[in-house]
Length: 242
Image (cartoon, rainbow, N blue to C red; front, side, top):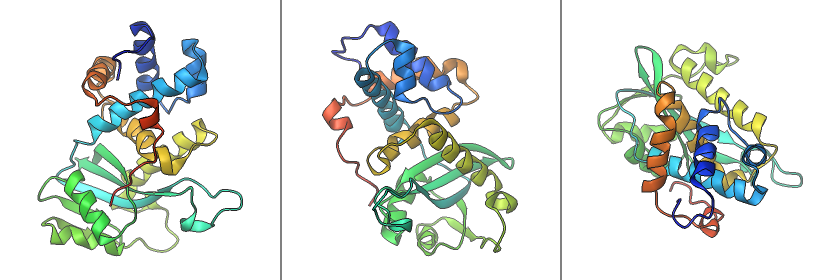
């Protein structure tokens, strides 16, 4: 990622610090002001760092007590399709690994749909064998029991917020924070194209929230180990889960 960059390492390290230590997300426009570079350069830096986060988090599997839910990111565009069929909406699975009834690790994975095929592929890459997974009544999640996981279904009562339902309380708190952080930071971005990276940014920081002092050096190592990405590759259409 850093190889052949014309920027000084101090700029890279400052960008890593600002992005990793932010309590929410940091827009490229704000990053530009801090770094004193052009918007084009700030955007490229931000996406390279987020891509390194994405590649690093892709290898993380959740285990033990896992709570999972289906979610959507993005809103309707003027003149576009309304509802879940909107061209700017991205389906993703939000999952949290629980320890002592508290959230420990999370995963946010864009998927093409919530079909059996897509959720099987998600389970293969996101879960360790033999998890105890709690979900709502979404039909597609039934594939998890076929994969050898213990699958508990809790159908939420009508009229109750997700945070009022004990098994999903923390999952919905985390999910709400993710959506608030993204909507509060960015005026607009192409959700279908870049959702995986923006979600990985939140996931990477959440999963290391108790190791803030190590965040920058660990992110530097992730950047050095990441597969190189050109601007063209970073701007290419995203490949959602099967």
